Image (cartoon, rainbow, N blue to C red; front, side, top):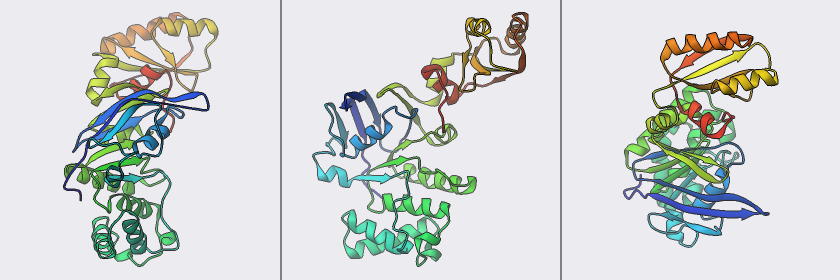
Length: 314
């Protein structure tokens, strides 16, 4: 793995495409030995930001610096970047070993170094016994592990992952998480773009919320929850049916907002279970047909909803 971990700094990144500003002043940073989860709804600008970090998208203004260098202009900076895309980026007719050797050569390793690093990586991801298997014969979880190995084979200083566990079972997902924790422990800086809020809470030291091309909030989970909820908990009210316009007004007056399912409304609740009892009584007095009322500790799901006004869709 990399002996020289590199930090990332994005400052006021702006880019318009076809008259639409896909990046609208986005700023974020990732320190060596740190994992930052990048959350955002579809169309938020995550893909454009990832392309800019990789040096594939020219900014109209602002900057991207990887270890202090511009990856778009500096090939040495790009060589220090590891990318694990959402789609499996492997050759299905090649064996696991051949895939890694090819990826190593494409990343600038010599033939001998590519063979050596491929063997080490296969052992690291637990696929040493499948080195000679064609990639198309591997399970989804194995392909994801091989995809990760391909992204770090050249010992990058910075790792960028885009939805790295899509479509894998829970056991394979946790195994991938273990590899990412190990990489972070070795000092690698990691940017994880994900829709998986549980994954973000499990892996990330910090979280950045990208909305409409701009980072709306960033910090640790605890900092974001405290800023959005204070000492309140999160209240979830599920109605029997969609509320009428009058009922909607009453729900909004109670500090609640609708989710994607219009029968479910969420919002902060002060006062614990005493507050829950009072809120429930007011809703019943308003004639609302309530199917369920729940109270839970606030987390990233609630933070996202409060800041964006809708749920993060998987």
